[in-house]
Image: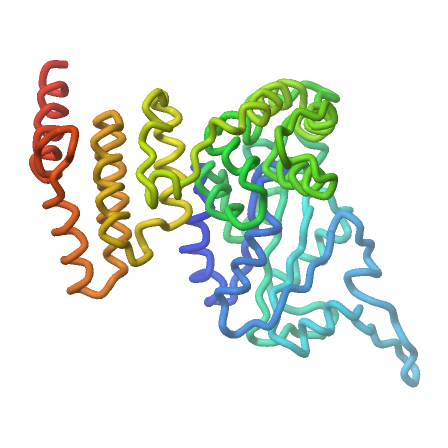
Length: 371
């Protein structure tokens, strides 16, 4: 089954939940499945919060409750979390379902199928989302297989978020140094090959935890040469990523702030940048929504001059990002921004931006035709 990124998942999941049908998210550990569930709930106008339960830690009693005697018979009293979902419109999040005892999973069958357990029915607007590590990656985890009848109770989404998903989510949640490291070293965000037993590997979750620890210890300040940084990084994200991270933070002064280019036009700072470093800086502009803000004439001109410095394919990416993001402005402002940008005369090229872009496109097409 083909995987989708988080952006696509968020755009389609609410349609399933609007039909009050259950969803199961399958994906590797540490990619943010739990986080995305809370983002889904925020998009649903009819729910009021998330009720989260680890199915792997539940027994039958945690699911169906306990009986009480009424006359000559017993009546099952639902556990508090389930009763809350019956009385209120919420998103019920059942995590680690494929690690749960079989008896609990059988009970979840009825919950998904009939929206009730032991005569107690969910609120009409309560929805259910489950998460597992199974699917394509199931062989790497100690989880139970889900048979066709069990899977048939869910709408199944295999998720494999992109680095851009994490960079977009984390831009205001981690420090600048960790964000920039991942932006420049995306292959170290998480491990995508076979896992060796007992070896520590990086994950999206482990980078957030490392960042929190380093910030609390005030180790991401000054020159950042404290040996504790490597020791801690190795413990959170493994040896290979820790070595790369140590080298990166020790050369942090080489990192260029967006303000240096966009506001101040300090192009000498990026004259010896590699294509990857330029790409990371352009990615940072996109993630920090530089072009969605009202630009001054100086900022617009600086962006145009920077466009003329980067390799052709990155220049086109920068221009595409600019035009895509200014569409969020009002029509008159949008047209004005694009026209002013295109009519800027590049100092080093002695030509207008629009003419430079035409030359770039012609060059790219010529290269493609010669292959």
